[in-house]
View 1: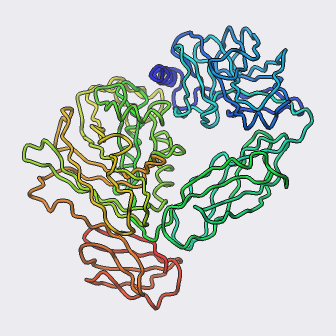
View 2 (view 1 turned 120 degrees about the vertical axis):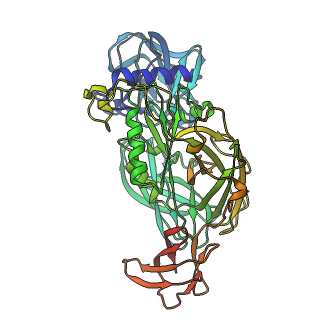
View 3 (view 1 turned 90 degrees about the vertical axis):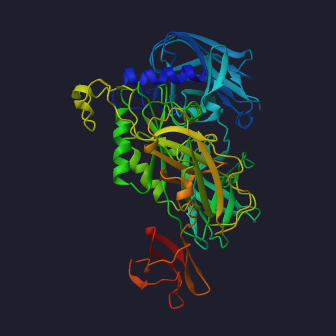
Length: 619
């Protein structure tokens, strides 16, 4: 079913939307809630995306209300159901079930419904008990199924082709369905940490904050919350925060976390203990996040994986965006073109990236779900947000052809972590890229300039027969989420780890002189890319100093600033946090005394055979 859904959404964007790649339509609600009614749902108040199968069909959508929430309101009633559709529909009915394939506990026929929000008052309201229920609708139409807001697993059930499927990975948001609960005048208090914002990679002994997003399931607005935060098995810290979160809405609370002395990966657990100074009925619900504390600074490169295809008339926009980023940030930006539905498609790679893409062209930066962007309009901002993050490890890739016939490539990755851990869960994935690929025509909707200027494509024909494709993914090894065992579970701070891998060139390669290899360090828990490296593939292993393993890093130890590298450095410059140079020394050794420096944060510039690199250290 996912292939049907992906195909019809692509068609929707191509036919009905000129420049916006993710929003098919946006319909404002004009329904006013009666005082006391609580709209439970996962969507936003606007209908942002219309979904269908490319032809008139009968579809069903549903959201789940878990027992933890129905238990809060046990004995109260669902009096109305609201549904948001993005096209007119017929044969509409709403219902409540205790399972997706179960019989209707409550149902009501609506008949025809117009594009927008429809509110249905139930002739037989449903009385809640502490059990899971599904609230949904069934209707017939084309692209009518409305989605909006953020993705929630409980908010994304769709029935088509005789089966239910969950679409939370598609990036469309959640189904526009709300159940209106009448609390009957009772004050019910319940809230939980819905999610935790991305925590920064921090240095030891540095205080920081994390963003917690609190969902208020109470019948009244939340004005204060007491939150427990716990690192690993340490004693929990309880803090009370003033806030303002309306019923059934989400708000942000910034939680300060005390400095952590030792490097490592820490598990942060958050839960809401009290709401408005009283016990929270959902106090047992917790959310977890990783806190990474490293003492070293490493060079960083950012990956952007772009979904594209020769059939996609808007995809020249992605080509322009990728080229601009490579030109502006040649040393730190790595673009990968993942083709869909054309002869350059790598099926396993394309299938995996479908979890991020809802239309084409689209791109994801470092596989961070918050950084799914248009590769032309949104790539630079997403890149800048990632390049500012300190990586947890340095990654160095080297390699060459294995023989004169260039039938395979031998690669070596040296990974150096800035912390020690006994349960590390990271993997390496290799990608083979080819540049200058020709022989495939590209559909071009910018031809003639009617859709605006786009890097010269407005002057090219609607079908470009002499198109040149760069950054084409020819293979990903051994799978999109990395190679099991490529990084050991036990890692030691500043101890290089070597991994060797040989790629046999696929038959799809057109020009072996235009190949590049990429390595990605992937967090196997989150699938986020932590760091990466890229090389141009040339030469033969026997004729090269293959896999030079130096990964430069900087530490302060026993009163000396030490540059960790295989070769002597040429110059070391040290600046304080205000930008004032405090040391500038030409040297053929990799250490200089710093006992005269005050405690604090310093910026270190190292000039070596690898060029100039900048690091942050704490004395």
